[in-house]
Length: 505
Image (tube, rainbow, N blue to C red; front, side, top):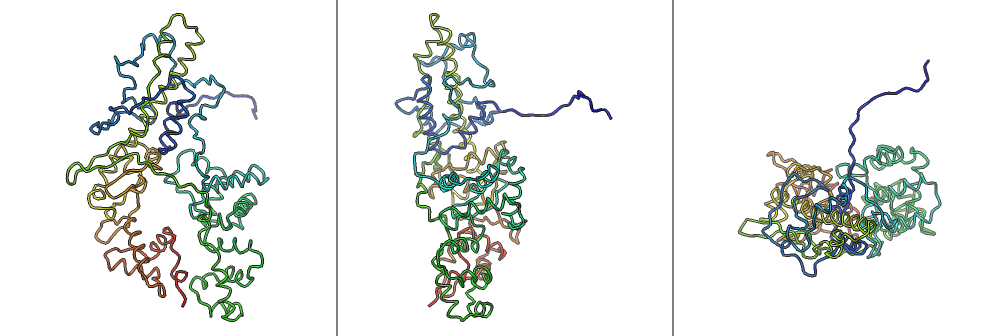
């Protein structure tokens, strides 16, 4: 057997993103407040970058069309950064002769700082739920392997405090690669109920235990039963009977079948009722107990205005963002023959960074505007007739319309808001799944959610509507939806089952 060293020739395709493209991607996923912070930080560290004292009228023009050029993420040249003949124009021939760096080359860090730090906004508000949980994680001494799993679980915690599996349709390539980690893959199996937690490996079990030990009690639960149990275990002298009911008779508890519970546990009905009253002190939504979650001020990036009856136009609201340009004093330094080589190198480095930053900001605006125009085209009835006319639409529909990747559409819609005739909406709210009807049409999930919400709001609290009753009521109003779909949407609306909504006289 030959075990010697051998040379082999092969071919592979590999894509490397330039620093400009990486910067544009990061900027695209920022919301308006994060972008303002990033601009302020860049203005502080880059002396070549300045902002106009008054908003630029060119950027505020409502008639400027969206340019659907060949530009792609991070490489948008459809906007002139410094128009020829203007006061801030640069002698590009001289600039090239002095050694303008290729945009593909890595940025040189003149100050010894991480270039990403300039794009990483400092927290200026209260802490989010994920930040609060990560702060608690720092106090736990656990192996790095377990810490990594807990960090992933923290990202899976929703606003209500419950764990949910990752939506693979919304994951970018980096997160998909992370899920190839065997531990993370096993976590997803547990969250998707493909594997029981007790059958998982020790690191995964321990990671769940660590997260569920955080405050508020009940955080990190996978379902309502587990949420109640986590809280009950942590309350001193909590009723042992109440805990037994949660552990053994939760299905009967949801239906408030006191007699059945009493018979199964060999106790009196009065004891069961007392235990259930003690269970009432537990919170079904532990995430709501985090009072430090910041209330963010929503600043719409766009506005949809009605130009004529039934005709709408998208307006990019750039007035709250400063118009950036290159500092004239430093520009002249490049043309000064007496300037030292070191000074010119510094100016070139900063000029290249400023140029890239302005392009990234401009690209963010144009991409969001492009996406919103496509949404307006697909969801015209929403803007003309109201939210109840929202049609089923997925990220891929818009991606196909504008010839971009779905991950780009996801970044452009997440945390971006539009001011419409019917209120302010996050762009991702225009995407919803559809339920096929008998006539071949599709019914938007948003319409079903609103209908369920209205039915529950108007129900008799002494005899609340069951999932089947809601299904029957929807069918009478012309919406054919399966009972299990109603149950899923009810849980999505954070509405408890009928028996837990019942008011006992």
